[in-house]
Length: 183
Image 1 (cartoon, helix red, strand yellow):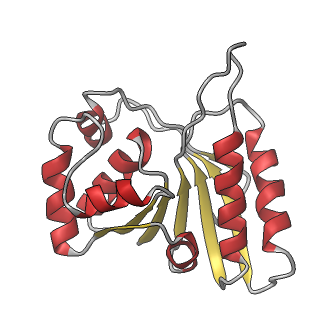
Image 2 (cartoon, rainbow, N blue to C red):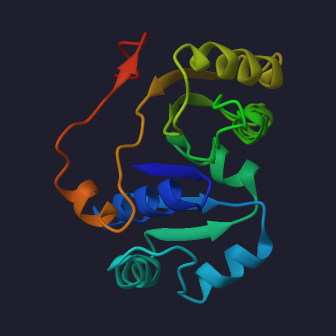
């Protein structure tokens, strides 16, 4: 399967690398060119034991790539993960600014796509966020009737320092969607 991973932070990089380790073709996208250069050099910018070795193997094998080009990665993917930060604001609410921007980027990229795409929300978000993200993506797609897409929620359950193990042997997997085709 061809996967685009929006975000190379903790969730995106771990999930993308380990999906590539299982034979998927994954392209991780980040807006920061310095982060992409570091990843191309085989260096991981987060602390996660064992991840750097897996990343290097997957990249050498051709199953893992890194880019700042969202459009190309999304257009060529079957599945697009939204795995960007949703930090808490001072009042404890989620800050969805980066996630909404990523959804807009995906929608603009899907203007150039064809076929069926699955957009998976991996970021930690409050209930109902899928509606906000769906509205953004639909608005940005515009009148491209050549692409169909569906949203799937798959919140992350990784713990820093044990994420490789947690991904490999999860104690639970949460998936939710209103689309039978996506499921």
